[in-house]
Image (cartoon, rainbow, N blue to C red; front, side, top):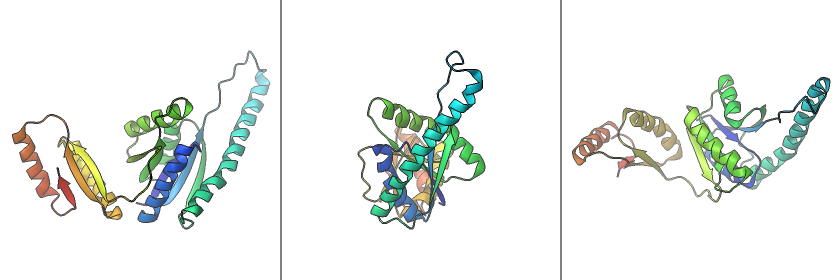
Length: 219
């Protein structure tokens, strides 16, 4: 693990998730790319002279960038308060949706893990954090760790892995193993879905043999 991507809207939910990103980066000797994605409103030429459109957009982008620069010290403060001054932080300011911004970053450099906050709150936070988390999980190849608003980091000693013993699940479990080793955490496999007892027994037996060398338990 070398690079953690942390998208943020500078909300309290994102700030809480940032603490998790710091702990993981420290544990895995990783850097954190802090991403703030922004979008500009669609303006109508009926209300603004066409030759002024570019100036208006430039002004809006500058305003968002100034707000971004104002918020960055708050993240460094959180890092210092938790004793993670040594964790390298790189800040990225990108126009577009969160998903499109992450896809753009992925074309330039490799990301190993995405950490972001999620919330059940209504309004803007739910739209920004909730929908983006769902979209990310379905659209990117990297693992996405979603941190609920009220979660508190207390270490990671066990990782739950749900499976119906598909080939895709087998691949995902193999990909999870290096992550668990770096965290010194056990993996607990939980069967989910419909499968008869005989098939389940054979699958568990085969997987147990295949992953016998790793700290994995089948529940």
